[in-house]
Amino acid sequence: MDLSDIPLIDQHAHNLLRPEHARTFAYPSAFTEGYAAEVVTHHGQGTLFFRRSMREIAELLGCEPRLEAILEARERLGFEELARRCFQAAGFQTILLDDGFMPDQVMPTDWHNRLARTYRLLRVEFLAERLIQETSTWPAFEEAFRAALDHPDPEVVGFKTIVAYRTGLAIETPDWEAARSAFETLRQQVARKERLRLAHKPLNDWVVWRTLEAAARQGRPVQFHTGFGDPDLDLRWANPLHLRPLLEHPGFRRVPFVLLHASYPYTREAGYLAAVYPHVYVDLGLAIPFLSHAGMAFVVRAFLEFTPISKILFSTDAHLIPELFYLGARWGRRILGEVLEATIRDEDLTTAEAEQAAEAILYRNAQILYGLR
Ligand SMILES: [Zn+2]
View 1 (cartoon, protein in one colour):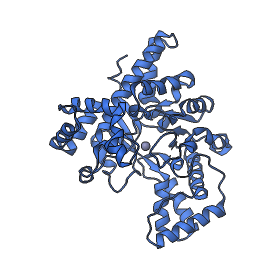
View 2 (cartoon, rainbow, N blue to C red):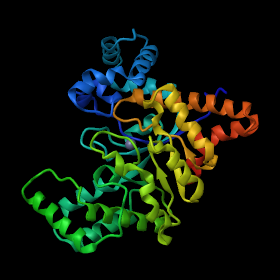
View 3 (cartoon, rainbow, N blue to C red):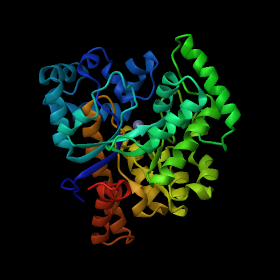
View 4 (cartoon, rainbow, N blue to C red):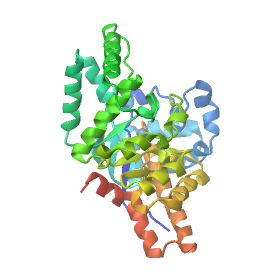
């Protein structure tokens, strides 16, 4: 099936790196989740994703499929023209950006409106870290955090948590005293002018809990990082099955939980949760386009084994460079087209049903979930 005319909603991606930082940034590092020098300069260039992507980017930029030639072509096009070319070829109608990733080095979120209609996802750990620096007492912090969640910028359509990265998805009912004492510890770090990093389980769990309470009041989705990511993550604690107590919690039944990154490699586990809980959704980002062709087809097939079509969302998790938006869009359409074609041959879906499934996954489900026009 050719899905190239279907508009896309990218329900989870990140801002582009500002041109002055793009110059000092090692381009191959955008294609790997590792950051050790040997991974960026050597092993990371041996993935099927890297090899395939070099050819595809070269074709888009009209140069030879070599790293040096691509870097030259990028320099020649310049920052804005490169971004425009990638987004034009990608065909996004709307993108949802988590702008709490490398916030001091990326383009402002509104700037991306020139490329596609842009909305924001509020990264709650980044918000909490900022407010810990700005408020000196626990009651003031509690109040400021609540106010920020209840009255976010009108462009915010959902919350995003990276608790999987910090202290894991086995979130417990907050211990208020322990959360408060973690706050005091972090305040002492602020006083010593140390770099602040919110990775104290009682306080991280408190942040997620407060976010879910706010999301329940507003009926707003919460995106959870799940599954693979950079080595800051302990993958054992990124399995979405750890979320069961939250999913069962009566107070959070109205909160849509969006499990990002196909929870890879816990893809079938995520698909199961989305099949049995009315408020759980799964997402294809990072798995598309970072896996091999067969790997990307695996995640889409794994979800379709058991998960309702209305629960599957498309995203790219593109970050820093516009090429990742292009590759994510291109492979999202292509893989979904191939897998849906097989569902017609298998007599799981009719042609008309497969076409509707493609539209649902590529934009309609996200449009409904986030209330986008
Ligand atoms: Zn992301």
